[in-house]
Image (cartoon, rainbow over all chains, first blue to last red; front, side, top):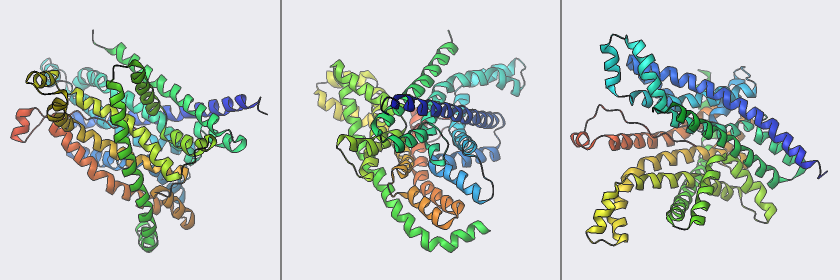
Length: 216
Length: 240
């Protein structure tokens, strides 16, 4: 029995880690898409309605715990007859929360590009849209990258919450295995290690990209 | 609207229970923040030592606390520590766990606050005959505080939000109470919306103050004196 334990732990945590990676990748995609689109629209158009909408979205989602929001999405929608599978609820929920984080990151990135850049682009005849796409966007993206990396690391950790809506990620599997084997310290300790590897990998990857994009 | 009606019908039953939960949420947040503050000072002290072993300990601690989800730390404290003969109540495990994570972030806030002060300030204070302690108390600390208040508030909001995770180790705080009410009433939408609203009512004012302070701080001094600015501030993003 005890000989089989390391194998059981490895299996539970690695299959869980795969789900964690999937949820992270899915939510990151949703969050980046929302954040980038909203921030670009806000910076380019300066439309008051849009600014207000973004403000409401950001304030609403950033001042409510992720867990409460996930419960609202998973159990609340189910009571309206919209039963999301837990994986989908996890990705959509964390993605929406993430969008509220990344929209501010992207926007301050875009706004930190010196005004002379878009003025110069306009003076050589680029349309505002082309100027944004070719001049402001790439530079703003580079400025936003460190904060985006921090967000991605936080997201990996936040995926542990989706265990509470029964998505079979690392903590969900760990908990089940603990219930079967009672090897509490060993299993949760190993789970911590797996998270350290995952968050470390994300942080390393971001700083690698940062270095590649550095202006020389 | 049905949604409003269900809330109105049950408000007399739910609100008192949610408020009891809110009390634990307050306890977790306030206790966690105070402990985290002390822990962060300790970490900063270790980091400022010349002894490389102490600095390594501080660095490893921060890497661990920032690289692992709060939930894992709570599970380790609440479920795994009894195996080593240390049994904590859910509330103390929750408070300690939240503080353990938040302390690592606050340590970074303190460090950033101190390193934002130009070295000339310290050198000038020492050159004018102040003792190192006077230099710290009269010159460095007042300036560092200016830079740390906004991030401290942001971290307080993060801590408040993270306290909801303590529901998963059965601390009877707001989120756990709302789950209990949900499983009795089968009205998850209204219950969780009400809960979210309570969190929002606590967190939003603090976030607004933090942002206002931040924007003041990022303005150049001349504009700050005139009290107006068109320059957007680069926001410090809370993570965790």
